[in-house]
Amino acid sequence: LFAATPVFRGALFQLDFPKGGRNGGGQDASAVLRGLRDLFAEMDMGLPGAIDAGDLYRTIFRRSEEADVAEQMQRLFALATGGPGPLKEVCRELFSGDMYERQRNDPVPVRRVPLDFCQLDLCVSEVGGLSLEDLLDEHTRDVQGNIEGRSYRLPPVLWLNLDRFVFDRESGRGRKHKARLTFPDVLNLWMLVPPDEPWVQPLRRCAAQRAELLAALAANRAELAAQSAAVGERPEDAEESLMGLVEVQEALSDEILQLEEQLAQHGAEQELLYQLQAVIVHQGRVDTGHYFAYTRSPMERGPTHQAWVRMNDAAVSLCGKDEMRRVCEGGEGGP
Image (cartoon, rainbow, N blue to C red; front, side):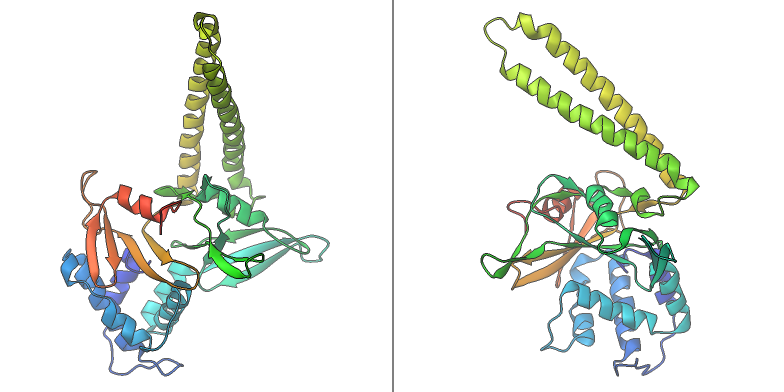
């Protein structure tokens, strides 16, 4: 996340680190930030074989200490926000936001919750075929008590945590969901902003129309498959019906494409489009495993270039988008 944020990297490169500089927990923040700066410099030089985050990790965590990716991120973020003033301000501008909870039967209809580090925790279910947009839309309604829904003031850089771990009551132990979850290169986050704002209404109308058309398209495809399978010895009898279904399918696809373009245009106008920059992957089971990451290559040039960098401890290599998606989207056979 930090490596894929040019503004943060630029602020880090401009710092003149003093000796010492321990944070409130007694850890040398300057040493960590210097290590982070040096790691980013190695990445920017495009020399995968020279990149090794091991020293940085050992500076942050004791050798006997284990931490999951969320704990690692929170520790590093605390060090960055506790560092020199200019870097602290950059962190606040890049990563902080607000959550708004709509409350029923309350004198204060909307409660604002400041978020120093705006991270959204999303639970991945066993149902396959979901998209990240579906999960985010569910997240706004996944509330309890007198809370009717939630929305956000989003920061320029957003961290999404996909939780695949659940507790199985029958077996009495944790397990990991491996359902496939797709995500786009550019994510339109219209569903996360306050729903009653006038400026978001064109986006919500487009999204509602798209949902109706997608449902109609799914029904059309199911009917087309059923009629195709039922064609007997006289296929010419069903030809007219099948052709009609195909024409409807093409018309629906064209309308959906137009709505997608309108959604993208409205999203760009309201600065709601987020480009995928990095993905952290857990490989293994609930009780054991290993983390590695993919980050967008700073040397990306054109569609044929290896657009992603795979960082697996000291093993750093270039790879394409297809490999990144095959590994990161999950599903059977995935990590």
